[in-house]
Amino acid sequence: MIESNRSLRIIITSMLNATPEYLSVLLVVAVVISIYAIAGITLFKGSFKYCLTENLENEKGILDKFDCMDHGGDWVNKPHNFDDFGNAFKSLFTIMTTSGWLDVMWDSVDAVGIDMVP
Image (cartoon, rainbow, N blue to C red):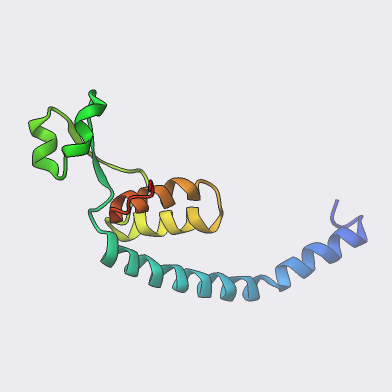
């Protein structure tokens, strides 16, 4: 099909010729995300964990893993976190693609401990 359609052949050839430029841009983006991932690990490592309990009234007084276990809950981690490089890279990629970035934002607000309700 490519041999019979001249315009399609030009497009495919142009895309293949531009591959090195795409790879260099991809490398720069990966380096920038890696720098931010390392910064995120430094700032947020271990702070995205929370207590999962059946009784929601007890969650206000729970501050750490041991309080959670005393109340009969499970100390679990959010799906997007900054505990290691892979999770940090995945979280930053999620933020960049704007697909689910609100969850990461609210989880980081909870991790920092900012009270958003006046």
